[in-house]
Picture 1 (cartoon, helix red, strand yellow):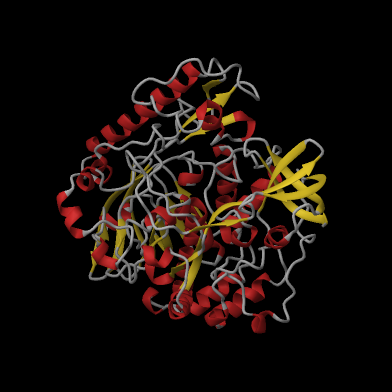
Picture 2: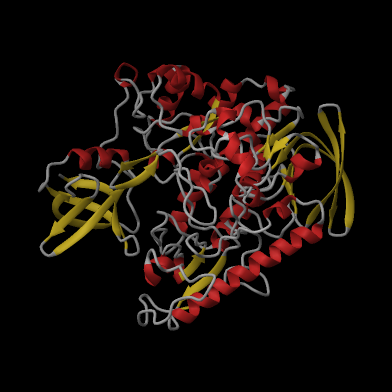
Length: 586
């Protein structure tokens, strides 16, 4: 049973790594413990992804994934206010499984359990797994951990981090001091970010039957305080009125006994799972009771309790010690020319999400890394170096999930679905290139990996954080190649220096692809006094505007108040906003 590449875990990054390795010509085996792929995107039910919303970041397997869903989901993806994308878990799972079935070099075994591992020196030799009551001994040249909790990393006895690091470790501004870590009981009680066991509700009408008459009972008494019932439920609304309940404010995050997530005894892990499930089911019951019949149990998963996700949403687990580590300093907006030149040199993926941590009580204070763009807040981009995917001790082991080499603080921005899809893509391609060229992973030419990610025939992926070119523009690839060849040309605002971009025509605001759910609207452009939000007034109607298109943002950010505009936009009633894709006249 010999393979070129074996991927353990069907997480978001695991399935991406397996698909990309097979697409790149490597004989690949994907092993998953459950019946579904996709991890966060489907099996865990977090089907309103965060980050990578702007069209310049919709690249790689994330771009292929979200554009395919946008063209195939009849209701469209503008379904909630936490994200510009919302889809049902089974819609994501159907797409991911179609990718797997389409690859002749990829085989998928579900229902697997890890057994023993044979590691000799710095290499994994064989792995024992149990699948459908049969035991198999597997051999592979490259191994990839695509699990949320870093299970293959632990089995291989590769070094990993778990829990907090002090501010002194990497000079992270948001990390606690070594003295606080040693003395404050909070850090031992809360070693990692809180997970959530997502549960699905179903709205029975487009609007509430009547206002909530009772508040939820403890421990959810504060769940509606910040936003009220309607906004709390439509936060994670999905097509067909399905509701993703993944609510951090007095909701169904779980904070107790998290060390059991990596405990050696299965009974400890099972007890943690049971506690999280019951907590989320109680939350659904409480919200249903106070909604006067507007919210009932949803149906989203193939099980006897179809409203309960198939697995937890793990925000953090083991984090492999790689050849380099992504710390908070790598996330924050770039202000130093030397640092800008050094960091992207081996970049294989671009992250964008704002740093976001989940703990009980008040929010943990974090250094800001967001900005106003397109009429709303967005995270500033950062780079993931290839070395953070490569184990520092096991030479044929890669990480393709949130278990890659990252600090506890930085994990709050790197753990999200879009970035993990593209990290998985890079890991899968690297594995295939190493097999094809007979290179050790540590000796793999990263420039070749970067070039092939950019030129991928199925899912071309950004490796440099350039705001100017959307993924659909014909000059997008050339802009990426130029930034790889000369990182100094990448300006602080995410554009290319004019001398480098003079022969590349930036896209016009009218050139974006048409939207199947777009509507033409007209009116006078307005902005708030602070200039942070955009509006369109037509008679007594006032519509909030947002955009994900760089060319549209350039026009809106510079438009004079009162300018008459003719737009194409998609209405999201739960935002509530109109997402502008084209400017017809301005």
